[in-house]
Image (tube, rainbow, N blue to C red; front, side, top):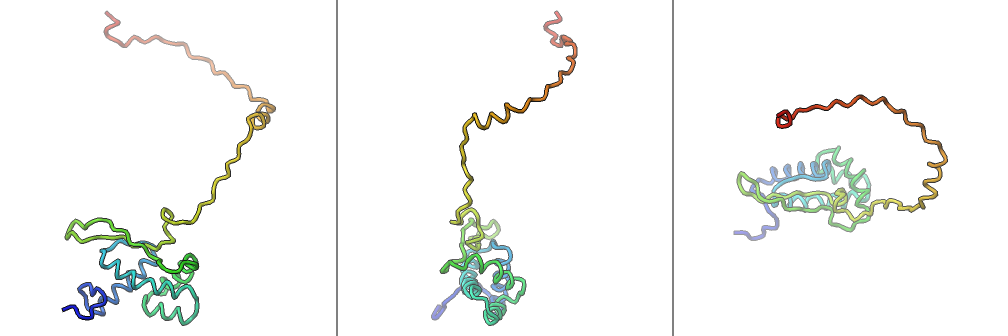
Amino acid sequence: MRHGKKFNHLGRTASHRKAMLSNMAASLITHKRINTTLAKAKELKKYVEPLVTRSKSDSTHNRRMVFSYLQNKEAVAELFREVAVKVGDRPGGYTRIIKTGNRLGDNAEMAMIELVDFNEIYSNAKKEAKKNTRRSRTKAAAPAAAAPAPAAEVAPEAPEVAENTDSNDAE
C-alpha cells in the first residue's frame, strides 16, 4: 500500500538514505556535476535546491542549517562562497537533470545532474563579443611598406642530380 508515500525511499532505510543524499549533495556542490540514476537525481534535486536557496543569505544560522544536512564543511564553504554568488539573482531551479541513457549492467535509467549556472554550454550569460574593427588596407599596409624588408640571403643551390629509379626507363 502506498498511502502517504510522498517521496521515493530508494530501497534504503531512512539513515542510509539520509547519508547517501548528504554525500551526493556534497559531491554535486564540489564537482558541479555528477552522474547517477534518474530516481536518485530526482530525489537529490529536492534535497539540494532548498540548501542553495539558504546559501543566498549568508548568516551563521543558515550555515549551521546547511551543515546539518551536508556534514561536510568544505562543501558548505564552497556553497556559500562560490555557488551562492552565481545563483544570487536566480529565483529557483538551480539544478538540471539530463538523461544519459540506460546502464549496461542492469538497464537502469541514468542521468547527469548539474548546477545550472556552472555549465558554459547551456548558460545564458553572454560571452564578451570580439571587437570586429575593419581597417582599410592602405593604413595597415603603409607601416609595413615604410619599413625596409630585410634582404633574404640566398643559399647556394645544390646541383641537381637526375636519379633514374624507374626500372621501365632503364630498358
